[in-house]
Each structure stands twice: as structure tokens, then as C-alpha cells.
Length: 113
Length: 111
Image 1 (cartoon, chains in turn yellow, red):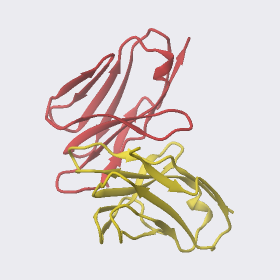
Image 2 (tube, helix red, strand yellow):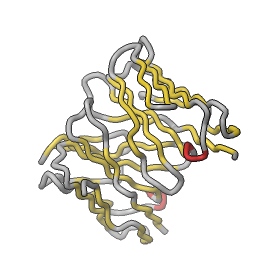
Image 3 (tube, one colour):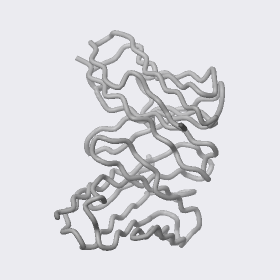
């Protein structure tokens, strides 16, 4: 089944404790992206990647890191999480930008205490 | 920076009534995509428009992209309870691969 998977789905952590949220897609998509969703603000893009070893900042990259060592994986790294990073995070992938849909993962709900 | 606003923020309708949400960008877009997110779910792609003035229909849903490629609308005819959710528009600016999402319109349908 074609899908985007994220792990973990739920995470409670404390300020300053490094964490990684994994994202994997099995559709051989070139484009992958991370978003955060906060009430009243919609979805905001954190980082995106056009292909392996090619990443770029979205609208809200501060406090986040990403890597794209393999085409299927695009982990999101929070080196030192803070409470303002409490949010719902979505990973998405797309085969060809501008002509194709983005497929979203199920989401990761993060609470930083 | 670039902003994409959607109105209204919330809409409650009686089942069978029509519904429209509007999406307005501060800058020209290369394309516009529409997504639906059910409560507790993830965004699901509905459609993409790329041409100025383009209109597309999917059953009871009609999508329109403005002539200046800065605004768009989604119209649902005769809403059903299955239409409940939040509708988002999203687009990229010419020459970039960065997506900007609208703030979303949350639709509730009363049976």
C-alpha cells in the first residue's frame, strides 16, 4: 500500500531533550516536506527536500533540522526542543512538484514540557 | 512575507445548503491546491489548478482559480454530513518550491 509513515505518533518530552521524528514513504517520491499545524495558523512548512542531499528552509525552520540521505526517508530533528514547539507535525511527499498532489502522513503530536 | 488568507474561518450550514470558501494570496501563485482534513485526520488532496481562470468540478465541488492567480474558491453544492472538515488551500510562488497554506475554513454541517 502506497503510504507515508511517521513515528512516533505521539510524544511527550521535556525541554532540551533531543528528539527525532521519522518519516518514510514507499512511493519513490522526490519531494518531501515537514509541516507543523497550530490552531488558527493552518499548516506552516518547516523544511522541504527536492531530492537526496537537497534540502531547503520553509517558512518556520528555526529550531529544526532535517536530513535526506535516502530518497524514502526524511527525519525531523529537534536538537533542543522548547515548549513553543508543541504542535502537530505532518510529513508529506510528492512525485513531481507543481503537477502532483502531496501525500500526507498520519501526523505526530508532540508535547514539550 | 507571503500570506494566504482564507475566509470564512468557520462556517456552519444546514445539510443541503451550499458552502463557499475563499482563498486570497498576497502574491501571485504558480498553482493552487485544495485539501480536506477531517477532524483528527491528516490533509487529503482534493484538486490542483494551474491555469489563470481555470474552473474544475468534482461532483458537488467546484474549484476556481482567479484570473490574476492570486485567489481561488471552493464551492460545495447541497452539503452533506460527510463534507464536515477543514478545507485548506495551498500554493507555491513562481520560481520556488516552498508551499504556503491558507489558514483553513472549518465546515460543520447540521443534519
